Length: 216
Length: 344
Image (tube, rainbow over all chains, first blue to last red; front, top):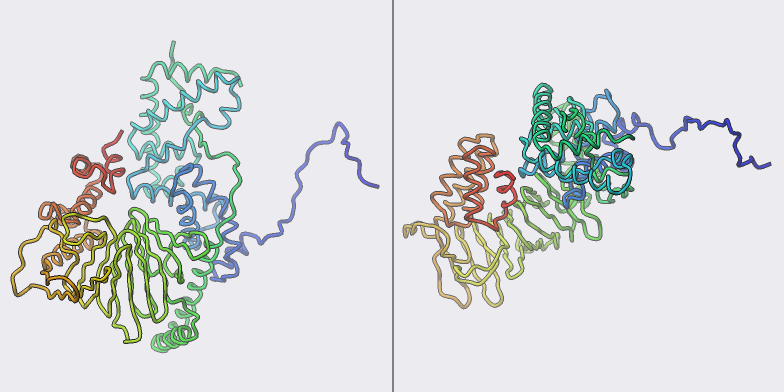
């Protein structure tokens, strides 16, 4: 008899451990470290989603995004021996990809492109009550980004990587190729500079305060 | 009424507009092929190192035999990327573009494109090489007894090993063909310049050896050091008669004297680049600035200015250099960089 589609009222969703059909990360890393070319396809498919989403987050629809994604995969391949298994493979790939993006933009003095893909955070936009509030918050975000552009680029970059994109200090240090202490200094000064600018813009500060007080 | 904003508010408010769960496209096949090629190359290198570990001399000999037999069987491609920097892309014929990395095979019909600030060097099985400068596009047309390339934009420095009589090496641009036997030369596909004696978008600089430039019915032989065409905009002091390069025109035109100082101009620019590459920023900056002051109207002046302002970075002097660059080259190739240096 086919199982009934209806669920009892107290049925709870549950998580099940499902065995993946693909190779484990350990097997994959061993194969790649042994220069076994039969792992090429599995390697690219394993790291590609983390690379693409990171490049998209940081660069948006920039014309160079595809090229940089591919460059990041090749960088990951070349640096795989430096992956120490202290964090997840995805986390390591994301940091390395962010470093590739940062390096490519910095070489051209275009790090500020890291801010052009910023807009209202998804979580923030989903809690806004109605289209009018959404428009106001979008306007507020544009003004925040405008202020961000007048903050020192290294500090603004550290701030965006940490407070917006969620990278840790150690990762920011690796991405921007500075010490962790320098990354910490840049972050705290960048945050302070930005807040000073926002607090100095009374209309915007008021708008942000109102949004802050809007119930979820 | 206003009050102080919480520290984390701006960060919570902002996100990436592209962070949503848009489907990730499958990776390009060419990327998988590039990763496979890199792994194979790594495996070969590792094998060679193992052999070398047993006995260095025997290892070197074995590597020679291995590579020789491989090439004779056609296992090795006719060309491969020997070095790359910045953003450079390879598009094999009928396939998707892939980021260029050292060791990547380059087959007939492939396009190699370098973006701004990128560079790539292609080495042929014959030992000849083509170094593609920033913002250039090169197609590998043929790789057998005839080695043919098409430069549709940008600049390539070419080093050709002496060829047997049965072989040809040709680099074509939109309006000329440059054929060589064994030489070092540079070819650039740029814009037609009224200051030049020939209305062509191509520039050829022969550093040594002999090159034939074919344009319609004209057939010009250049014996290095020499350049073609003769552009009055090139800043150069009149060369002493003894140093005058030998330029022979085969068909249709009167003999012309090439400007020997162009080789010196190239050499000085190259010396500045070498200083930059070895990390001697101070010396490189001094040389680029000196070059710009000495040859303000040369074809390399803009590039020297850009190199200098990159080395100066966001200092006051760098900003002044960026402002000067934008004033002189409002549509210059590095205008975005210069504007970024000046800030919003």
